[in-house]
Length: 76
Image 1 (tube, one colour):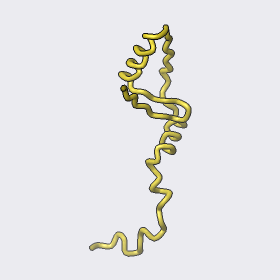
Image 2 (image 1 turned 90 degrees about the horizontal axis):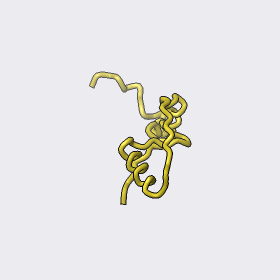
Image 3 (image 1 turned 90 degrees about the vertical axis):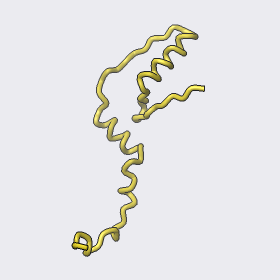
Image 4 (image 1 turned 120 degrees about the vertical axis):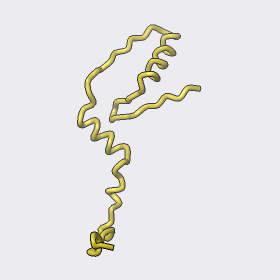
C-alpha cells in the first residue's frame, strides 16, 4: 500500500512532486494520460483559505479576556 501526502487549498490539492510522479507512473500502466500543469503561484486567497482551514490560529478563538492582568509586565 502506498501513502500519498496531500495538502488541500479550497478545491485544489497540493501533492509533493515525487508522489505526483509515482501516481502518473501507476496511472500510465492502465491507460495513456496527459498531465496538465498550472505553474501559477498560489494566490493570497488560497493561502488565507489554507490558514483558516488548517486550524493553526484556532487558539485566538479561545482567548479569554482574563488572561492578562494589570500586574503583567511588572518586574518579578
